[in-house]
Image 1 (cartoon, rainbow, N blue to C red):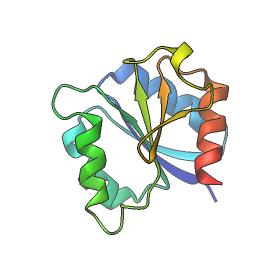
Image 2: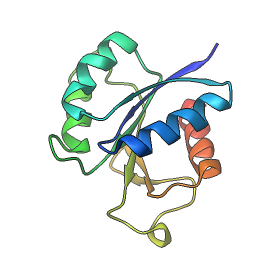
Image 3: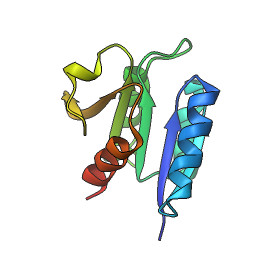
Image 4: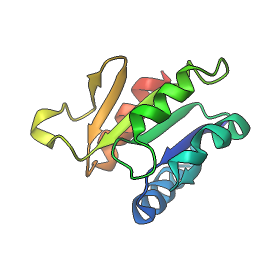
Length: 123
């Protein structure tokens, strides 16, 4: 059974490329969003196994989205991997570092590093 990934990033080119690459593995069903204000409602309907979430977005930042998920009983335990351009790759482990209880990866993310991080979160 394919794992469901919700991908939230305000850059359509980023979400389109990541969705295609993840779906090409045959292991994931990916729903992508470019409007973080729709993330909570989309997650309620889609019921993701994991969320890939950009940190810096104009309408609503990734931290606010993650906080909203934490308040939802059905979404509170869904792992979130933050994607950020705020830190450099030199400051982050290739397969992710931690911000609080969440893993984060530096953009641009090498696809193999992203897969390793996803696999680590999904067990």
